[in-house]
Length: 295
Image (cartoon, rainbow, N blue to C red; front, side, top):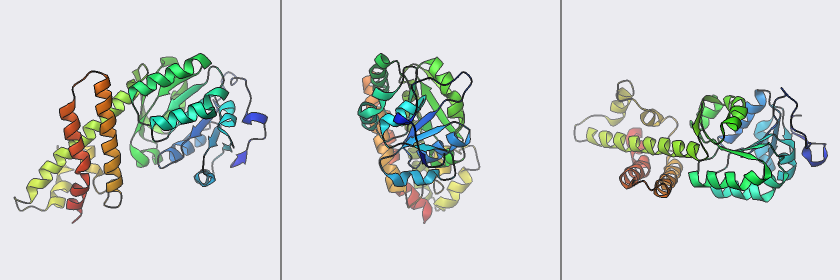
């Protein structure tokens, strides 16, 4: 089935999987993180169905069994679980209303692995409910390295029964799978995770800034701090996953994540303005911090 187009009309059948059979997984979003996640799903033995706007996106699946579909509807009809790993809530709704939901069978599960607003997760749940399709918000943490090494943390919100059904699929690319509660709770946990990372980055930048007046080598101090009780993921990522080559891009992505955090807190009626401001300082100051540690 490697790279094979489905030969069945509609790309699949309308019947649910037989008892004990591995659920067929549709995957959309074969980007930096989504591609290794999709490969892990296929290599774990789940029938993998994919669709991509650009045929070149499918090249990364060479060597693993998969069925590529020409339309969203074909993928939806062939899948028991449809996983989306795309950039924004808007992208998710465009796909869902652009052919996915209309073709998904009752009892199927739609999973959003992207980071977005909790309110959007609730709205997506309400949109899919009349069709009998359950929804999970299941953003992941760990970046591309975590996806490649299959040690992502998957933070799940939505019905517990759907979360249990999908857990073996999530386990294919995850070191930890945690069900947080109702729709939107996975997104809330992910936004808190992202905010704390950026708060820690701001704290690292404060400490590194002190090395100049103290006459210390910033890079050597940072290396020492990684070995002691001050160690953190924020510190460890510097000049490993976060490099001078990609820091501008990552800084922008983090700033957008803090905007999502701020919007989510406002929608929840929580005053987190000080955390948002500090987190933005960590995100926007990341390029300067990485340059300082690279010289």
